[in-house]
Length: 253
Image (cartoon, rainbow, N blue to C red):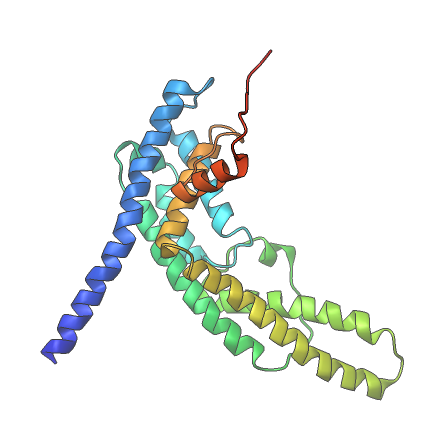
């Protein structure tokens, strides 16, 4: 029993270290980005509440543009930082990033399981259902509502795809066979694609902590203007490799 507790504590410590390292680096980089912009940008923005709100919106849009991963319960807690990110950056603090990473990691894992459960069963196309613009453009209220939204996100393209095929035949028997056979194919493809995207996030170099830390710093840079960019070491190496050995001259004449 003691050995199990020791192993759990070691794994928890390793997990904490894996998250803490990229997050702390991101806090330092975020501070440096704003200082560099203040010194060298032609028209630097003031690091204030307005900047904070823009950054907050930009980060959430980048990682959850479809408003599917986070719930309104998550957003309510994250909203506490909407006008505080300027203070987080100035103080090299990491509270927002850590909370963001925690929620995102949990939701990715939950959605992965939800997708399996939803798509293992054939859809009932005789149900009277609707998917409103309000649902599509809003965060789900909780995990139950999140499952409903995911279900509708899966069902809608399958219904549309099958409808295109079915209209080619008027025979009811053939239509039924076509619906049954193609629905299984569509469900399998959608599940594979969805899970592949989630695993790509989870298994990205450095993990989710590194992924979101990079997104956070990139969002800070683009808050100054669309042409300002934050590059990781890998980004920089790829950029320089793409330039080759040619000498490039940039400037105004």
